[in-house]
Length: 383
Image (cartoon, rainbow, N blue to C red; front, side, top):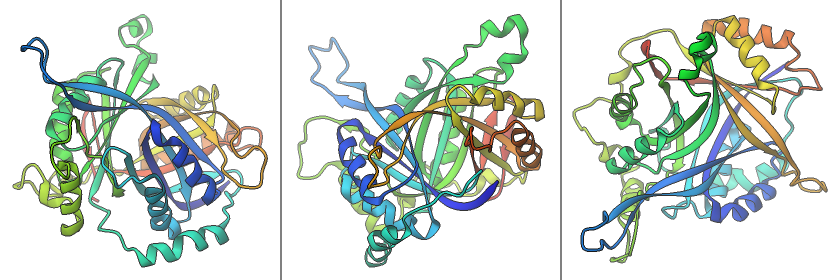
């Protein structure tokens, strides 16, 4: 088992710019990319017909979330190169952010570091970016059909464009016997990339609206990330001025050096939600072939994990010079939120089951979690 610390980059893009994204990844020669199908929600301004329909309505469009890992020293350069190739600085195109993770796998992941150094290092030094450590990712897992209403609430606050994906749940439902029929196995996963100062406020709104304080309704967790650009085009419609409001906001973010100036509640302190120093939590993502994740998810719950979310992905390799650089096959991740004190026992259990064997080729990603909300209450940690 090989353990390394790398940068995990996530890039959410509109389906219309996927060819540009694929070309950028091919140029970088990245060996492993996971692609998650999703949909993004925004508000559409329409002409009202004599008051018979609302002038503004939510609209869902297809999107993809690309997740890949790169050495830490190339993080800024890779993000900027992709953002410029796909034109993510144009509002409505997408978002890109990174976080430091610990990766465990049976064999080391090899990169074309000569190419990455040539394409990314110099460019990152010549074009320094604004402060990127002022964003939080909120991941909310709820029952099927609830994410759209939560997304509409966040859109009304004007902070970001929500992304919705789908998965399956393991945990409380599997321990209820015949009562399990009351909790659907299908889940919706809502992703929000929001300014760090507003994370606590948005959490409170989501917890109240989704009733996450009740068993079986779902849970929410927060991670802090380094975002180069975030899609804040929450509203689409006829353009009336030389620049959209989203372009004005992006320009002010660039001038101010961060998004702190537009926080919703100026009286809140950035660390107010982390005044309790509870057990440090981690998000463990067990990545394996589709159909195998259930085994390891149930083993994790036998070890003490409270629940898991299984999310399907498409695996691709973008190494140039290979005939099958665009070939893909199905993968699945089993996401677990556990105390760090439980990590060693869980890793030992899945290793015993052959998770890191060559045939299974499993990968574990460990990421620090800053806050979780379940029906059992809040669990916070200091940043």
